Image (cartoon, rainbow, N blue to C red; front, side, top):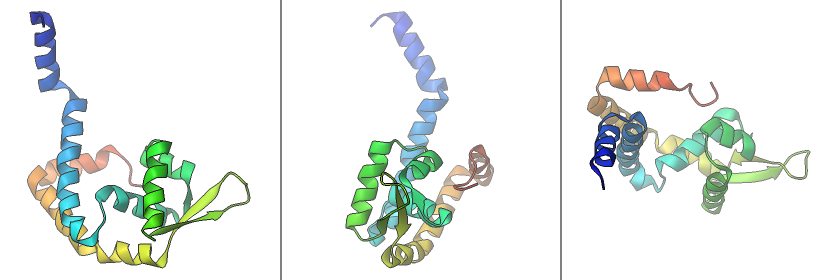
Length: 145
């Protein structure tokens, strides 16, 4: 590798917001996943359950847009959650569209994980600092907001 390439790589590694946000995302994901492990759910799955519940049910395309998730990733995750009995698909007026809603087990799971989620939330707030935590929350609107 030449010096110019190495110099740019060092600049990007130290200054690139995308690099830091992706790293932060992995660190925060591990924190929440560790707290949720006893409940058999990941933060990614909990985000989906939350979005479905907050919307009062949703279509696949709506969830993808709300959560900014690729359709293939979303389909795979939802299939797994259906197998676990947390969500169900119901046909809508259109043949190609299905509505997704929580099952009673999915709704119970949301309530059961609350103390673990609150603990992870407080740990994240503590590790990031209250100012940084509040600033990050302001960057994107809440789900459904």
